[in-house]
Image (cartoon, rainbow, N blue to C red; front, top):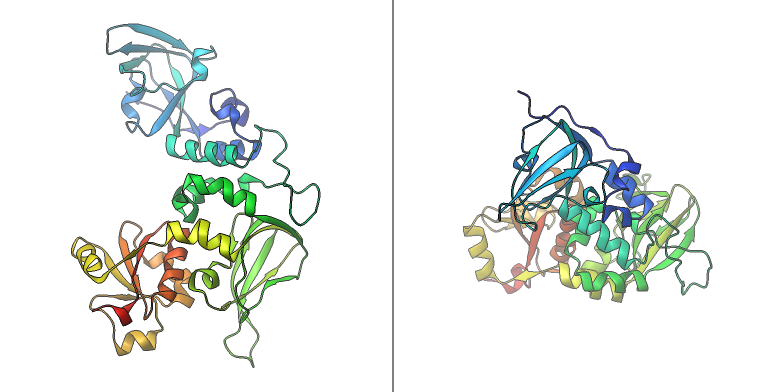
Length: 360
């Protein structure tokens, strides 16, 4: 007997019938619907046995589900009823087991992802499926809105914002300034001092770098809604290493350097001394040298991988997201920027305090 058939996409209107999913903004609901599927479960099977304990919410979309509790009580949960608007939470409700009394349809939702969506929607002041929070922009412009959906939920779950303390989220929204931008407008320019961290709320841009003044700039990447940029110069307290130019008209959110350091860099970039670093390596962590290849070739810590800071984004796919990396350079400045970049891609990294210059 087949336990369940191939999952099929779920309609947003169906998701919107459930709690607390109905409280999500329209964009978040659409984002969630893209990764949720309806599963058909055969009669007499227990759908909770197929779940990863404690990490998924289970909703009954169609049919009757029998529930038996630890105290021996029994209940029939019928799809479409008020009770079925809420998830079958086996741990919280002290459910011993369940059984499909008829052929049923269920949808499973990652609890961590749902919680992240709810947190960011609520802290951004985004009313459920209604108009987004109008920003009382210090720029003096009217009608600007911070769209929490610009912060892609999957990046929030695995990237740099996943490490942002919840207490800092609201402060970040309050301090971000929305700006109107036009196609072909240069937002940051290679060689300039870093002053802001940017997030694209709407539109797309290209990232370029001049390696040889006699040659045209090299296009490094194209970025769009939800992408952040400008962090390298702020995290390393250095000059811009690339130029970012808008490809389209759009809307950006920007955060001043001092706010970036306080709200983002400080809680994300953690440091360890050499003794702590060696202990981590002994436990399975790896050294990551973000200096130039010439510096690495001259001298490096035994076993270290070389991933120069300016090439780090293109080398991300070669790194193992199950490992912890001890990032180092000569002083700790470049490695701080590297750790922030790695966090954006969901990799776990800590910085060798003071770099190789101050370590023995």
